[in-house]
Length: 499
Image 1 (cartoon, helix red, strand yellow):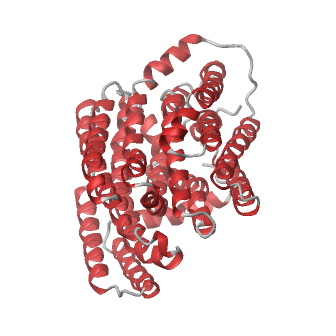
Image 2: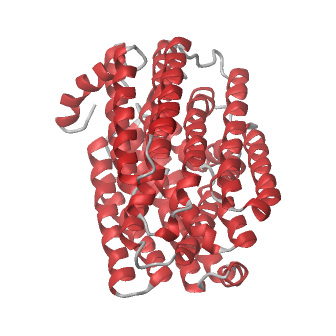
Image 3: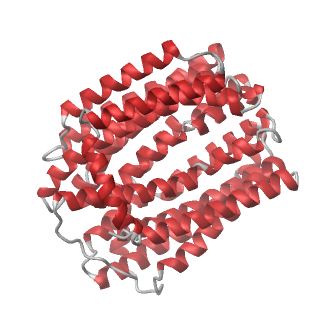
């Protein structure tokens, strides 16, 4: 297994490396997480809104299970690998010990829960039992694949292998989902079977590409250290699930799966904001991790955090403006309510993207994860309480608004916690962020005032406004540096996707 050293870099080289990483992870994330969006567009005329509501609920349950079975180890593995990357022997034992646990425990746990708990949960939520069992298995397999091959490839910055692996997995998953659902007519169960098989392919192929020689050379001290770091992140991640997915369960229980279908469609259509945010965060993680031992990296983080804030706000504005008319244009009439949910869900995704930067500093730079879960649990409880109070009265629209409120609480709380535990805390450049916020606000107001009611014309007008907005962000400063860095990163990225 290749162990690349962390070399000294200039600021320009650091920006180029972050951009290449972000571009690669963005492509991988688009392939992985946009697959449900593509399937929504392809299968919306085959599956009913109620069936899509069941799919969304099973995916929410599987996400909760995956959160529990990850044991918070993704960040622990990434951080541990970066710290020990110069010691080949230590890295091998670390991967054998923590990686072996991360492969076996999630799959075994998911299989047990599928047998014991899935039938009862299926009857409670009125979803097919076989589909829920397959969803649980898919969760365990995908957690194992994420924790080991994908996380290690990110830590090693093996961008070409990462993109190759995700491309193969998504292509196969989309293909067999269409086969099982559209051709075989297996409905919700077919969707979950395809998800499980796609996750299994990702795991097997990922382990083959990783080229790690597994053996019984282990050191339980590595596992204890990783669990001590990761387990406090489990309630944090589970509360994240409460923010991201519990709304679907409450909608189904309160107003039925008929409203859950359009809501899940709106959630899928706002995924681009989340994809951009996660890609930017993952691309900059090596810099945050290296800042633990290099004070020079803190200046790099200031530039990176400022750029990410503007880019996340821009991505949210694109989805919030184009998403509603595109929904009316592309989806059947039964999904029309999704257009009302998209702006609020996009705003929530924006707050999520802004939260990722201080969270990187807390977990990777400071390594102080012990109490961050308190903030996340509070935000999730506020979101769930609002949903329980308002969704039965107002419907799914209330859940969309509450999502934005919940993520706003999360972002502010984690930023304040970062200011407390990081020495020094990450800083932002206020001028580019202020200019970006003003320009984005003006574009949203203009789009609301001048957009026609016809969906096709609305897409064209709003897209034109966004083009002007992006050009203004580059010309007036907030994104001018990033535009130059992207151009500088394209050539190295095209020469093998390796830093």
